[in-house]
Each structure stands twice: as structure tokens, then as C-alpha cells.
Image (cartoon, rainbow, N blue to C red; front, side, top):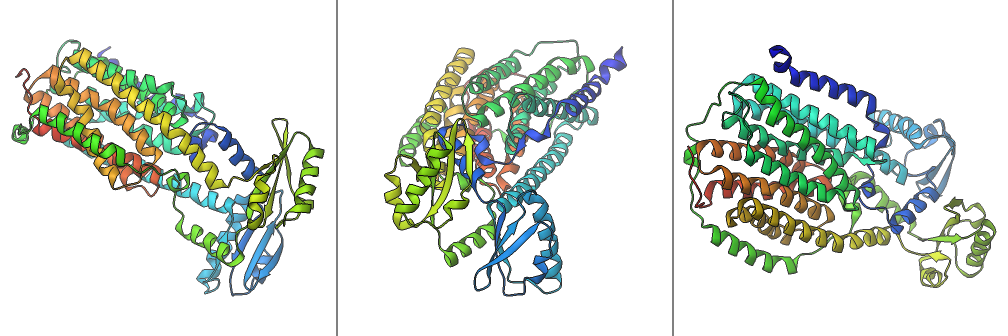
Length: 555
């Protein structure tokens, strides 16, 4: 029986792997940045634009002969548009990925032979293919690097190999269950949500640290109230966010809740049955604690900073910036726009196919078209019919006056999505802050714990003054608010002692490490999220070290 309990963590890992293998659905994973946001009318229009787009055409520029390209599979023909600029027409019955693989392989081989050195090419489909690959590579690199670093950190912090191994096994099991649960509950799960979720899942490490350094893994079962309060307040915060109608927040919240409850049950109960060696303390740890800053000063200064900074923040509505910045392909796109010009695109809609065709003819007879109305693709969606036409930019204002025309550009639609999110997000953030403050006061009845919420927000607002605030910054503020309450509860409930000092400092360092690697991402969405939370956690670490706390002293 003792051996079963001792290795029970590994049995749970095996069950988690079986659950993952049989229930995880990788077809639901997406790299589409819009999947992070609510399904609104503008998103539906964007999807219609994409479905109507000529995805089987690729623009290329080269001064070299294109004869070798004509022999590639899946190509119908190559049409010359102007000097050295061509458009490749691809078979509509094949996937762009199949063409791209052959095209890229041929180009790379030709470049090795000294050909196509000046080649430029662009297609929105190819941009999406390259971005998806870059996002998956970036996310995988960050996850692997952070996991390796955290393993090293656990070994350094605990210095008990069997406990370090069990901790790693629990974190992996919790994340496997969390990832699988997301793909079972949601139709689309953005790959970035998983990266965010893995970082958030590391918040649970403090449950283990507080049990371990308080010697609760050495003796018979003892219930740790401060860890329970920390768990229940964080869990409650994510539970509230679960019902917010933003896919990113609801997905992150469900992921976090699953990870937190699996980790809490393991660290809080199972580990006490396994039992581990007594904790090894760093004698120099006490010297790190230098209580210099008065708590009232921290609160007043934080409120003043927020009052100054918040009215001066600049909001960035551009969703495209949050995606992977494919500099080479975007530069090629700009080159073709400069050389060929950029027409305006309008979307026509009607209740029937006949009505839509009449609308197309009406447009053709009154406005200068830049695309052939005879070959316009017609899409039926939700009992409505749509078609897309390119027109002369000078006629755009005239087209806007027609009630069957939607003349909003892709950028305008994206900006409307984000501008519609900001106000409710700010309201939600305010409500969550108030709820968290009420919960913390109910548990601790102290202003000390309040500073762990307001001080990080104030320093983050200074950072926001030097950056355009995007929607991911606001999402990350919610995570900071929800996760910061733990630290206020721990310092208030556990008192000033070497055990608390080890637990809360190492907990903050591991959490900073979990989010910190996101700051090095090439994807602005991940970078904004990781950098904002890292700043907040560094502020919390500074409070743990330098805040004056007139609270009970422990052993």
C-alpha cells in the first residue's frame, strides 16, 4: 500500500496521458488571432471576405526566367501583369499548402543555384501558412525552454530530487488534463491560449512550496488554511472570468481552473500521503528581507500613479499587430501594392442569388470596376448571398451610399472588433478588481494584502504610458489581479518567518520564470501578455522583500 501511495503521482500521469491520447483533438487548434475574440458581426463579415477571396492566385516578381515555375504541379497558367510581375493561377481543387510546399522547395533549390535571388511573392493564403508555422514554432520553443528552465529551478529551490520529480509530474499531469479539457469543451482553441495556460498553470506551484517549507510533507495530515484561502480566491477569480463572453478569457479561465484544482488536490493532500524529506533552507534568505517601505506610502503612491497614468493611456485597435510579424512577406505585399496600386474592395449582399446578380449589374453600370463581375464568386451563408468586387478607390464614397454594399475594409472591421471590446473589458476588469479586493479583505481584514493588488497595477500603468495598450495588455491585467491576491493572503496569514519567506519568494520567482519567457516571443500577443504579467510579478516580489508589514511573527 505504501508503494502505491509513493508512486501514485506517476499513476496519475499515466492516466493523464491516456486521457490526452484518446480525448485531445488537435484539429481544434487554431493560429487565427481572431479566434481569441468574441464572435461578433464584424468577425462574420471578415470570414465572408476570406471565403470570397481568390486564394488560388499568387503574385510573383523576378527578373529571372519563369520557365521552370511553369512546370510545377497544380499551376494552370502564369499571366504577366507588367514588367517582371506575374500572377500564378493555381488549380482550385488543391490545397494551397500542397502548392506552397512544392513552390517553396523549388525556389529554395533554385536559390542554391544562384537563381531567383530577387524573387518576391505574396498571397494571403501563403501569408497565413507561413504565419501558422512560425506561431507553432515560436510557441513550442517557448514552452520547451520554459519547462527546461523550470526543471532546473525546481532542483535548485527544493534540493530534494524525488520531490522535484513529483512536482514536475504533477505540473505535466495538470497541464495535460487542462489542454485536453479545452479541446473537449471548445470548437476552436487558439494555440496561444495553450501557451498562456501553461504559464498560468505554474501559479499552482506555491501550493507545494507552502506545504513543503512548513514541513507538512513530513508528518501526518494537516490542513493548511492559508493555502486553501489562496486557492479558493484564485479559483473564484478565474471562475468569474469563465462567464465573460471572450473566448480567450473563458478558455484561459477553464484551463487555469482545471490546473489549479488538480495541483491543489495533489500538493495539498496526495503529497502528504507520499511524504518527503524535511525542507532545506537557504540561511542567507533572511538577508534578502529588508523592510524599508511603509505600506500606507505604497497604497497612496499607487493610487496617485494610477490617477495620473490612466487618463493618458493610448489604445491600439489594430488586431493585425498582435499576429506574427512576417516581415519578409509583408514587405513583398507592400511592394506589389506600390507597383500595381491598391483598389478598394466592397462586399455585396442580398436575400437571393437573382437579387445579388442584379446588384452586381447595378454596380457595374455606375461604378468603375477593377475586377470582372462575370466571374465574381457568390457565397451563400445563413440564407443570405454575398459577392465581392474590386472598384476604383475614387468611387468608394458612391458605393457606400448603396444599402446593399458593405464598404468597410479589413482594417476597419478589425478596428471595430477591438474598439467594441475595450469598454466592456475595462468594466469587467474594474468589477473583478472590486470582487478580489472584497474577497481579500474578508479573508485577511488588512490593508497590507490590498497593496499586492494595487501596486502592480500602478507600475504596469507606467509601462503602458510608453506603449500603445492593446487588448492583450487588458487580458493580462485580469490575470495579475486574480493571481496577486494569493501573496497578500500568505504574508498576512503566515506571518514573518523563514518558512513563509522561502515559500513566497520562490513561488514568485518560478511564476515570473513561467511568464517571463513569453516576453521574448516574436508574436506581439504573447509578448504583451508575458511582459505585462512579468512586470506585475516583479513588483510583487519587490513588495515581499521591501514592504514593512506590522503582522505577527512566526518561527
